[in-house]
Length: 157
Image (cartoon, rainbow, N blue to C red; front, side, top):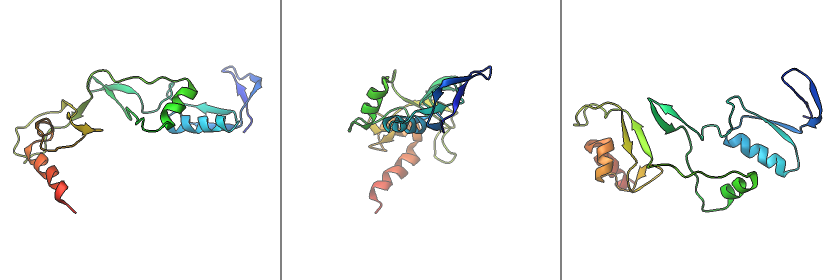
């Protein structure tokens, strides 16, 4: 692309040149820019929000600070950790226990009507998917009828 940088006043900076333009500073845009740099190119990354990371961020939902998108990654391999190290980024451990902000139970579940509520993630779960849908903490979140229905999935072909 080889464009010249422009300051807010419209003046060109002669020594700034780029080989590629990456639109969006989310995980995909950051990964694309990183791959371009590793290939020996000079990408220009532009992001409208004023911060990189895309939906890997936190923000308020109904007055509660919540994760807005992907909040973690698996460290089985070296892909994510090597990229973080090479980019000079650090990981941040979550504070407190993850929570789910969920709507009321569906009518007809035999449960008492309730409003939107903040629930703890089930104890024995992977990315919020419970190992045992009949566990008491899962039943407290989704209700007895939904838990029984979810447990039936283990018997499906």
